[in-house]
Length: 247
Image (cartoon, rainbow, N blue to C red):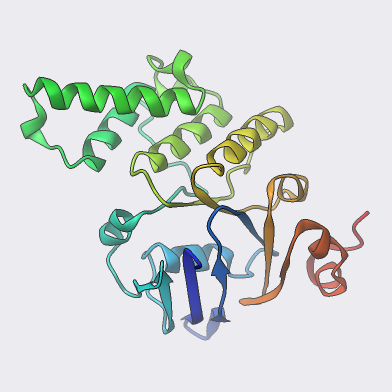
């Protein structure tokens, strides 16, 4: 059973059709990458799945449950989380405080948390676990503004994991990173994908070919091709439309 399934999803803005009758299955226990040129509809498609945009037509299913048009907070509670191309973190706070606040919210604790030792311990334990999982334990007390850009990316992924999602969508996690930090984040994404279904929008083809189990190629709002990295690499339509002659 697909974890995410879309049927003829369409979204337009004025006279532009950004996503055009897209029907795909995202399978659990796979790392799926979505590629395509700028303007292909990748981020719009992400926004539809995660509730930021409502489709003009079509349906979205999560584990065969129709989630089309649900508000964002309900979609998150069902187990769908995402990061953004533009970082969305508190620069003046510490790594620990960023994750703590996200964990506290995801566990449903508000002001009533204060003074409840057992709840405080639970939030602290979960915060420590997530920070360590993302390799940020030595940066826990540092203000976010002093982190490298790659570490900030890891922190944003950590925040997305605080909801304990069943599927994690990452929008261009390698954007703006030098080669060494791309390798580091690629390794963590592969690690996360062992426990959580991961979908990545990414332009770095070396990264995509190295980490993906399956690749979806979008072009002019449609799915042009799908398959394993090897299949996509050899697809003439993909080469002509996007990749060029790949070695």
